[in-house]
Image (cartoon, rainbow, N blue to C red; front, side):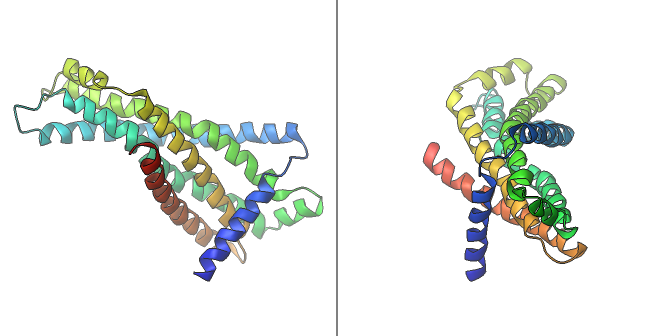
Length: 247
């Protein structure tokens, strides 16, 4: 319990250093653009494959679960859309990104700590926490919502492919279900969740990387901790936001 409170306190103290006024805006902006390309382009392929196949599987499972002739087949499109917009795209994809992006961030900053590059920045008078972490957080807040919208589209496309290339349901029924009872607020709710998750995906691994100590073995341990704790935090925040915004 004391260790957990110590980590929470250290995390917020680090964030206070991260959000101090930058010394050189041009340098920070250049670093943010670099991080946007790194975080965004590096994740598109993985998210595309997972979203497409998950959309197809959700559609197949929903069709197979409908046994009653009283339930119209267009509800399959509705169920696929709601599943992807409300939960699969914002939460599941962010958990996947927490594993991919989070471990990379923790390893990168942890390596800099072990090789004393962070100490060198501090000696030169640079706020190392802000210089290393702030561009990653800003880049994630811009790029991850775009990745999640991309995931929503591909997940729904996966269901459409099932309708187009199987005899289980028709494309027209699927599209009618997609359009049926659509609420824009559900997309806004998903994007609000995504912004919180994007902050967690970058700040929690940065914390564990920044305070890595020891040798190369500790970098692996920091990466594992960062993925575990950022995933748990995402699930807790997901529950709280759902209670506040959707219920």
